[in-house]
Amino acid sequence: MREYRFKRGYKPTPERLEELIVKYFGSFEKDGDVYVVRYKAIEELRLWLDGKRLKAESRTNPNVDSETAMETLRTYNRFLDELTGYTAKERKKHMMKEVED
Image (cartoon, rainbow, N blue to C red; front, side, top):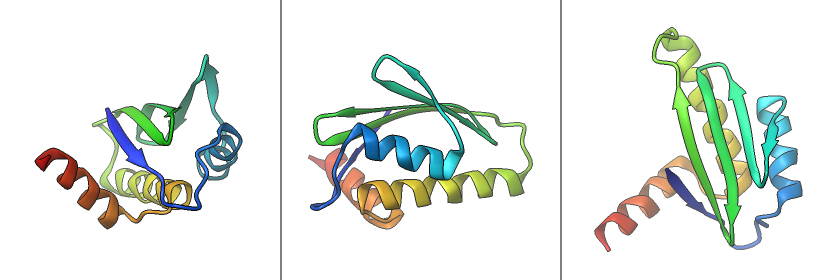
């Protein structure tokens, strides 16, 4: 499971999460408070808000070609950039810092 924080000014609301899921992945299903997304190399991506954090669990298909895998990763990173306000580099830095603490 991954946990992402939101930059100041980026609201962690269900409405915003739904809007960006549709923008980047096309559609989603809801399982209680959990949003379930299926997109290209992502067999299942489960997203939910926990206070001021986004939590994500994913299962990917290892049998896709590298072009599809890279396109899926780029789309997921753009989604997280717009949702959280942090770039992939900044998110990595936060995760490394949390691991050290």
